[in-house]
Amino acid sequence: MTTPVLLEYDMAAGVRAFSTTRKGGCSQGNYAAFNINYYCGDKRECIEANRLSLCHLLGIGMDRLVYPHQVHDVEVRVVDEAFLALDMHQRASALEGVDAVMTHLPGVCIGVSTADCIPVLLYDMEHHAGCAIHAGWRGTVKRIVAKAVKKMADTFGTQPAMLKAVIGPGISLEHFEVGDEVYEAFRGAGFDMAAVARRYDKWHIDLWEVNRLLLVEGGVCPDNIKTAGVCTYAHADRFFSARRLGIDSGRIFSGIMLDAEMA
Image (cartoon, rainbow, N blue to C red):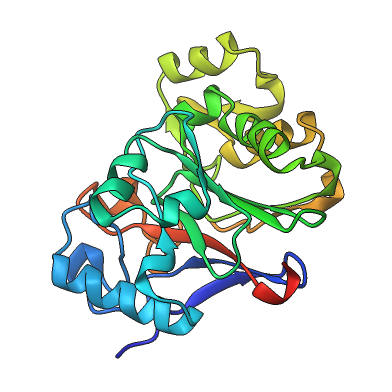
């Protein structure tokens, strides 16, 4: 069994947070080598083997690895005892069309898949709860991170100022060239375009900064926000990039798991 190579984040004691790299799996071609996403065209046997190796590394069963089928929207799902009681098909249905997942259960790894979009991980130190968010440009325009913070407050009693946040690998401003319609979508949604966009030959948007600002606006302390600063497009040898490799390629998995000892 191969061992996945992880980019790990030091968020706090009692929580493990990470993003997978392309290394340490058995997938081939544009999926090489570590991909666990079912929805991007990879061979199922490779996905299953990679999932098993990640679960082995994390010390959990495969039924404790949870990630949704994302659709670039703002639906947030709580992974609780009732969710874990569902069978495989019921779980898949519950996770369909979901772009953020959160839990307070120890020993459950929740996460999201990206390949240029922005993964955001949140940890509530006070209530020992975590959240994983997929923030593509459409979800970012719709302020998915702000909605996830509010959902944590409503569900767990989270105080935003107590949150730790990591903005994981994603496409950088330098490489995120967009059409005028995307620029206008951000401008029309009320974002400070002078702070988050630059005009070269075409418009470029800084998704890292937009999501950082959304976290701050939502009450997260700026000092509690870390940005990995890894551009997937520039480092497609280590991290999957749909713009660089095409959509028929693997996906990064960014996950967060709570330790039982802290519960």
